[in-house]
Length: 372
Image (cartoon, rainbow, N blue to C red; front, side, top):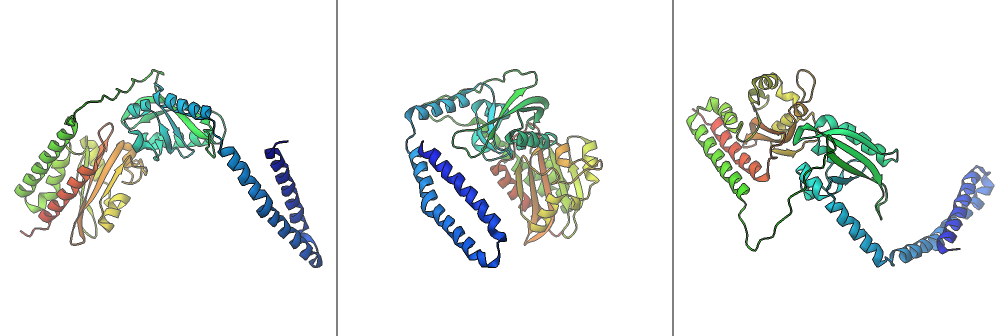
């Protein structure tokens, strides 16, 4: 009999004795000291015998990792990363543990950014609850599942998601392997391999974004200097719309906010949001109370900006992928709130853009509070 089997039998005997001690709790008062002594003896047995025994078994089992096992694990990691199909490992809460190269190319999200974040954050709001429910069922061992979802960056294209439970070595509980395929089960294009160069090549995309940001700052400064104070908020929102954000919502006031302007992809959408009370938007109300800007990428709460007249969450209806909510403050007093939304496949707001928006908000506030 192996040491592990002996330990198992000893542990099973201990469990049976504990059950007998629980049953003896109904003994008369005179017999309770005997029961208590037996319970203390069993606790000493665990501390002095079973626990050291368990530590020895753990040390023996963990101190002899075979070189072949390590090579096998390395091979499996390489296969996972190089698999031409987009796959990800998530837990029962859909938090990403690992994502392969094909998945980063398919979702447009870097593996380093995705790890530790829910995979549902990359889906449209309408699909998130169903995906969470199916992932939890698979993690509970209720069998493989599949469903159709939509990525926020390509909401019009259905994606077939297949979920199956796996138990990686060393993991305390099962994880869920998620395979993502375009509708029709076609194989997505492989990511372009990295190329190594001897010299440092300028990032032209980054340079272009920086130049666009400088143009925006110049346009905002011009608009603030040439418009009367009473039109400041409307003109600022007009400058930001399109070139910087798909939606721009301007709310003015201090103690009580009032909706001043809404710029949206269509007049119908702008009118629908214009009719809403800013106080019904938790994110806007919080910015007005605390005076702190908020940057959210793939916001989790669909009700952060409230609901429209039909009862649908504004963020879900607009397929918002990132947002900036910036209070207009001076000397601790809030004079308004600007909310900017980006949707669909458009790049999320970056920290540099958030910093530029913070600078513009200070200039807008100075113009708002300027006495005529």
